[in-house]
Length: 134
Image 1: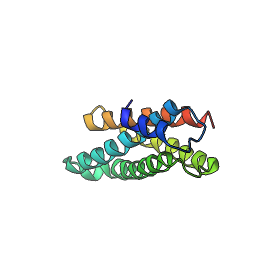
Image 2 (image 1 turned 60 degrees about the vertical axis):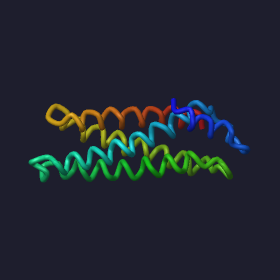
Image 3 (image 1 turned 180 degrees about the vertical axis):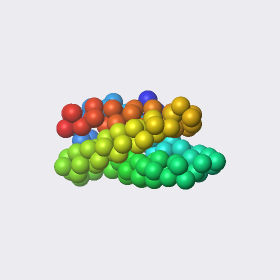
């Protein structure tokens, strides 16, 4: 766990009443996933058969955007709206599962897709664990 994420989560003057370890884990996993998906899309663009990677690139970029938004929304604890948080977590889980499946199709041929699929699955699990507590 990234200690600065956990330190910020636990030092907030208006805690939201969820397990700070699960909250910190979801923030960190979404942040890592956003970066990994962005890097995977870039690596896909560098592949010789880039046209065959179009769906993967698009899914990577969509996942990166949703994960980045999830990171920001989960990091803001003031005036926490549980309905919005649930919707964001559900969207993040959905796109991470979709992206993991897409990248897994290319994982044998492209190591970056294997790494990305793993990051997406980890993020989906972290978000699922947090969602289960809301």
